[in-house]
Image (tube, rainbow, N blue to C red; front, top):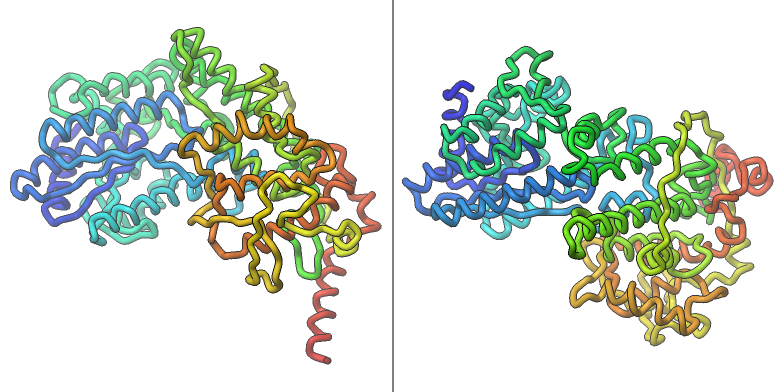
Length: 573
């Protein structure tokens, strides 16, 4: 590579640290590792002149479904940076950050019923990037600013103009340069290797591997090349050239293993084909992705027909929308089976109980359960926890079935169902304690912020919905408390499935999000019409068809016209 580029990038970081900037580097792959190297070298230079320079934060987001092997490698690089900082007296800190619990991919797909992101289903581009990477990073940057009491916090990215036309356009749109700080939606940012080629990146890695350049990643440069070579079908031309066609020679791209914004994850498949020994354990993710892609437009199988939000006047939107509960229950069985088989394979290989990855832990399971119960439609209370016990306690296994790709089809227009009569008929009472469901102690919490006074189960609030896991609370709830209470007859037929939320709230396991302050009202509305969903079976596999619903639902124009009439009556009375 051109040493002038490397020296210029190191000098850029030296100037930042010398001018009292706190620098963060998001570490995720080969490009950002080069940025991290330059940042560490820049900090070494700056601290010679100013012992108070720094600190440097090296941060990686764990979405839980990024390439497992590469992510674990990146965490090893974290450890190397920490050791290097300690040995050289440099203020280097590393951190692994995660999306909020409700935004974790498995909770979004299996719990909330969000559709797999594809170019057709993602109206906001790669909105998964916002939920899973950008928002956690923004939250982390706010914490760094608060810790150091300064706004001078800059994020250094590994983005390069030559990566793709889209990347180049985005860099230009944000106004980022290689040596100047600019303000963007992420705060202050800089793209220090913006003008580097792929050859520059691998030349630096090669020089470090050959001990020509000192670096904190000297013990990991070979591993970096190995992983990218595997993702490139076993080859990695370090000097690929600057021609765009040959520049792809070692341009494997790793990321979300369920990403459907591209047709195939060629790098992941190449890794698996290159070395079953090293990468074969990730093969179930390929099968899971294929299943979700193939069934995404199988509307009868995978989609719910009933909306989850009450419209004005007590109407619910009816039409194919998010994943159905029955489909999510199947997904949960498949994903928990993947976890269980991984634990078995790990024990067979290493002789002790652990895992290389886990898609659904206790917190994720309970958050999925919370969303299912809040939405309504379960036949029995705690169905997500019951499925967990089927797999992890009873030893049942649910292999992912072979499927054919279902082509997208034009959908009927949405219709609107009036549930007011059913609410009255079934005497739906909402999320409060009563004698019929005496699972918890019966303490009541009277509130008036819903527009009317109502007795609610006591609850605690947090910035986002959370499952508390300290002292093994989540594990104990799943493995001990739930099966014990089930054996005592608390969760049998006839008990409203929403009682599981009451139990989670009262024992302090679940904290409710304060955002918008609308949870209480929406949750009570959801639970109001649970019997309606159950009776009409709109959220289940054997759901009613549009033709069967037409007699009971208003078409869109009549629903809108009804709103106009109501608005007109307000002016005429």
